[in-house]
Length: 151
Image (cartoon, rainbow, N blue to C red; front, side, top):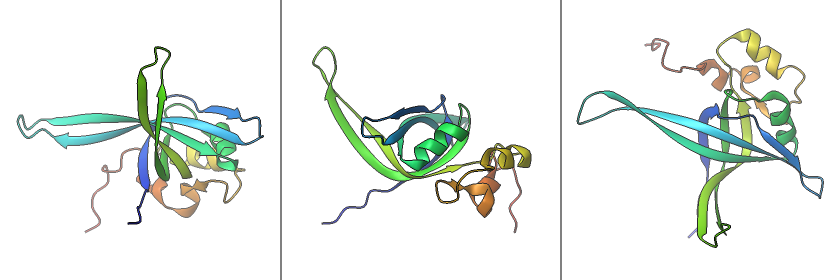
């Protein structure tokens, strides 16, 4: 049976991107993202929040763009595939984790048009998706539920 492995995640960078070049010359950038989930606790009725921390690997030209334009706290939308890594730590204990290998990284707006145009200016079209240029996810701003519904 064929599988399907696709992840779409929106969150904020928990630290500045970690950029490096491999001996082959290939660029890779590691992003650490926190994605929040807000929900109502069924037992107490109070609003609760849970945070999921995810590592994202970005390759090639997109890695270069991430290094240049992203920093801690910046909201991003990542589209990619889930990857499972396993290894042995220094004590010989087995360790494992899931991470995302990004196909597309969209730089989302902080909510002001000035920050959005400043950050995406000069970026190569096709290197990464600038959501503001397409009127896509950047229109969500930093808090997508502030606006009234259009109906």
